[in-house]
Length: 137
Image (cartoon, rainbow, N blue to C red; front, side):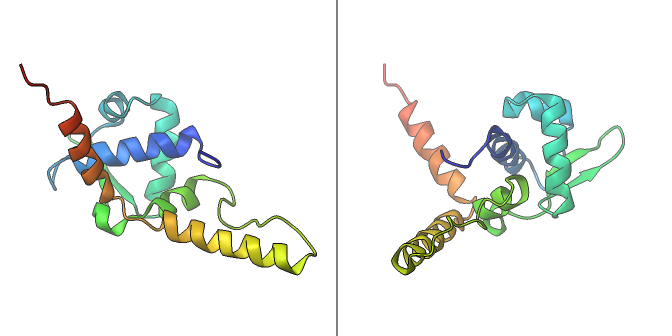
């Protein structure tokens, strides 16, 4: 997908794994990297960025680790992309042509609307994935 790096893909995978936890549970970085299928050191950097913007929280210690700071309903795809991707929604193609300028502004609005989707939608897609893997013998 245009403008979406592996950084965002790993972040979404980790957020999804964290959403499966009980409210009081935490996942350490090693376990989370394994479940999210992400390189541990790279994921560690990503999680710190998400913690800075209060999408994640962490606890130190033997039973420490990461957890969501908000529910999936409160986190949008735009929140993740805006945090991890440089200028993902800010730069429009430069043009002096008024019609093209209006065109790009409309596309940016549509894109912002599309990416404002709540991550709660992940649950819907998980249900669909579960249904597609149900085999009858």
